[in-house]
Image 1 (cartoon, helix red, strand yellow):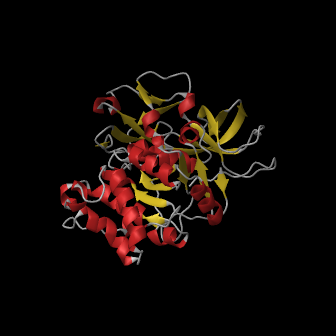
Image 2 (cartoon, helix red, strand yellow):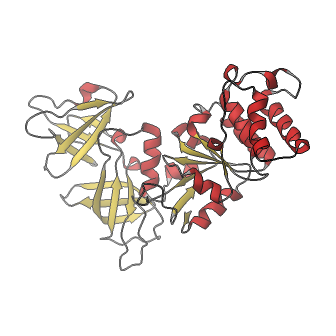
Length: 353
């Protein structure tokens, strides 16, 4: 779902009470959340040398919450996050001797206005170890939880994902347009190029090499698939994504996203969907980078027109054999195409930044 205003975005995410909305690779300034009535967990100042009770009660005391109300809220959070009630072990335990993330979440849940959305950083979830607890707490309290800069694993477990195609002059997400969808739709049928890119970044992270996005001309489309041609004559078949009409006319402009990880390497030319690779320049074979999971290398295509980044599990796979050739190919279902410009048939432009 493409939302055209900031108001539409906030209304959408705040309405899904008891759910978790993840923002892959994105974060809004805390002041923005405060201005719309959400409560950032980062607003809670946790001291490791204070007891659990002191840290949970501090924001309530600062807000002047009457003790009768504060006591009930504190007891509820102690019971939920620690399985304890007032007067037992957890309240008197120093925060540094327990899980400070739980203390921060407990303090935020106690301090925030009833029903207000809770904003959490992905770092606080600790590789999703607190994800299920947070969702249960959201259900009990009937409020939405927003997880910023969500990792891929967090995004996969969330109820909804939110993406921002553009940024403002300060490098912050531009709320004049947003995309909210399910994790399944983001992977199987992304509405815009930015969705595919940011989900890929959440999964693999930033690499020193650029991603692969190519502009082409549509030769045909149907049944969720496209057939396009690049300016060099290279033809590509792939999965048609975005909010296109049922009939996409021949000649439409299309942006094709080919993540480095979808490529397979061969020394023989495949039948379709491939690039013949050469050195990245004439003086060396191109540097190979390792991100801790995969090896990456940027090649120049044999027609010397494109630069293509390819990933592989093994370093030697990215070496061009002496006197031989190297080809990078991909399955059509792994290539995502987005109609990119308005044309005479009235196809709407797709957000692709």
